[in-house]
Image (cartoon, rainbow, N blue to C red):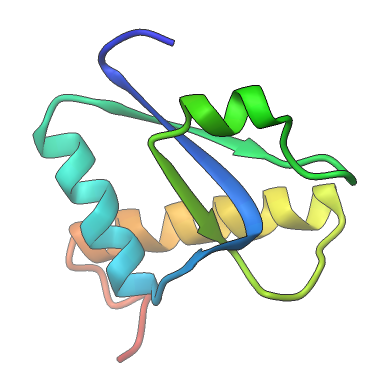
Amino acid sequence: MTPSEQLILLDEHGKENTTFDFCEFLNKISQNNQTPVFLIGGHNGHHPDIKKCAHHVMSLSKMTLPHLLARVFLVEQLYRCQQIFLNHPYHRQ
């Protein structure tokens, strides 16, 4: 990890956010000239050493998701945030 990267662990026990909260979170990281680095936990979760290095722990859902589905869910939320930042009507309020 470089000083300009923010390690974000995705874990079912992490903080849940709305889409707009997630977008605000990403916007703050961006304003600090930092890059978010997402890490999806394995079937046993994250190793304790990795948890110590994390800047944030967030949950995509309290439900257990297969890795491929978690990746798709994350990409969808990143796309949705991009559209919100561009004031595109993709996300309906």
